[in-house]
Length: 363
Image (cartoon, rainbow, N blue to C red; front, top):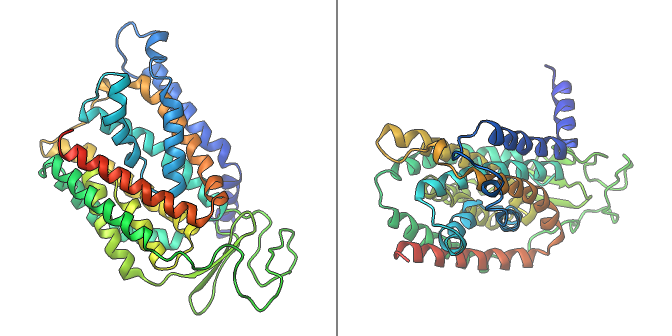
């Protein structure tokens, strides 16, 4: 297939991604209702038992996808601390399954939405994923021999440190549309007109509106016409953060997104581009960690996942909620001020770290 044909397919996919993304959970729900192993005599009461999880997971998915962190960072503490107040507590293996299924759909939905919005630096994302792979795999394998309380305690320390670093990170670098070009008119033409020196495409899909200069400066225009200028320098600093975050991603299911966003902001990647790019990194490393957890556990005598014990009456509400939240997130991210996002993420990290310390202490 030619490059032009691939580009056409890519643009068509991104243009109609809303339809395609929502078809996926519909197919999933159809499969659940028809072939998933459920308790004998399961009727309407069984399927509607956890309807109230939809607004909870919708809110959670919108939050985590807006700031570019792993869904499990909120879902796991919720299922451990809040869920038992309203229902029976879940076993650790059940938590893993529900978290993995829900996060897989939510991350995929949000990642595609951010690409369609023009806020993903795919070259940067793929480089970070490649560097994280050995640490994610290593962390996942270590999870079978390191006590669970150690996982939670170490990740709590990491998130607390990330919260401190975020509050002390200078986010005063370039914001959308604030570049200092020699051209006095910085608006981006959406009709192909040349009103500035910015890259332009009427569709603003995928790689459209992106140009890399000879000196490495990247000029990106999102779907709303906002422009961002930055460089991809600072790979070593980002690699250090993503190696630690990747290890925690393998150990506990989240960590690479939380620490990774700090590394991109500290290397002057614009906050909205950092959030969008981080989605690809989190999505791919989460899938990799999930595969190692699912298949690696059985091979070494660790935990394994059983479809028969899955709470299907929960995922029929959590999956659509996370998909919808993933689609909403780019618009929320674009509407919020940088300072608001920074403060919110910092507080969120501190809260999650407190929850993890409580988990490690046995509460």
